[in-house]
Image (cartoon, rainbow over all chains, first blue to last red; front, side, top):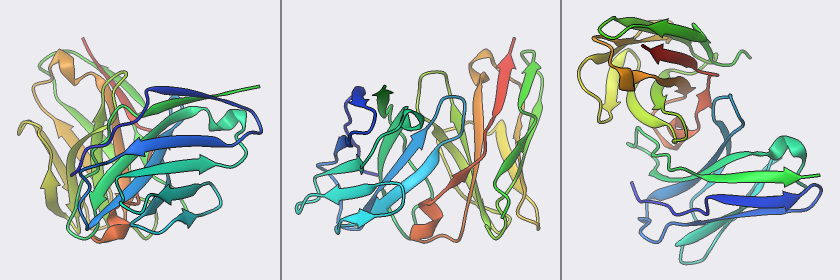
Length: 111
Length: 115
């Protein structure tokens, strides 16, 4: 699986949009971008994934650059409950059996 | 729809002992993965089971073994415990082996301390 690079930490004011970047310059054509988050003392939680088109669900939006070498997870209106470690992972779809987690980005939402 | 449940939530063992951790999959899921998360690190893949067969394994020694049962629940067994085995053990379930297999539902984990 391709590797990802994320900033170790970020702050965001409550109610503002949180934009979490991820670089994956060695991503292959068949690899998807997945985002998970882990709130303290809980298991990771799936957020969203995409291949090359932008994706949106009830939790977040995923913006993938045209060359697919980077992406941004957007939480449109951050709340205190969004404080967590956010993991960006690239993995092939069919045939892939593991996710390789890095250290992620610790997002702190500030009142 | 029930989520992933793990037991026990916390346990303490001594070096050299054996431990069994249990996991019930989310309803409708047929794939189970196990991850180890050391303090301050991201989860590390141990292995995955699909329909009762091992479908992939990470860089863990053979003393880490597992089972998946016909109801898709699973066990993780660790023999000859070492101090470095102290970690949070996470079970995750998913559906199939395609793109959806990487959309994991995680349990809250079992916190193992080895003394």
